[in-house]
Length: 173
Image (cartoon, rainbow, N blue to C red):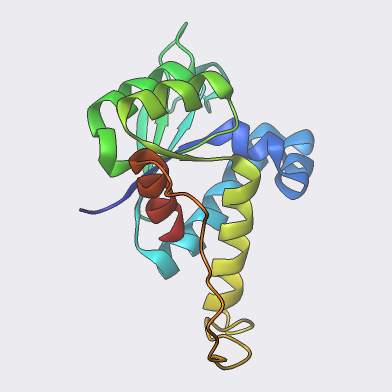
């Protein structure tokens, strides 16, 4: 089952120290830098990505749907919030979706629908790691070998099915 990552665009931009600096200069610049970073992430990870922005801040003359280097970009309609669009997509995609936002209302709704969720700062860290791996500055190999042990490892209790599914999806990032 392919993973569809749905990103709350302005939430990710404004939660990030780096991206928020560009957003403070110009909102269009903030969007462009985010899309460039996501395009780099997509080249490495190949997940389906959709970024949702509030339509009130959409560039003039833009349509409500656009594509940028394989990334689907959606703007909410006038009078509608990006959160509403994300919730609608979460209700449609259900377990195939991973929602990137730090908005608690969207997280709660998405989890009820069966979607996995990840906070914006954690996703930004995953994007940065993927960029480093793509550039060859970081490898996926462990630094030290396996040491045999008889010490019991793992959680003292089994995670719920929903928590296990969420962990599997975020592990794919």
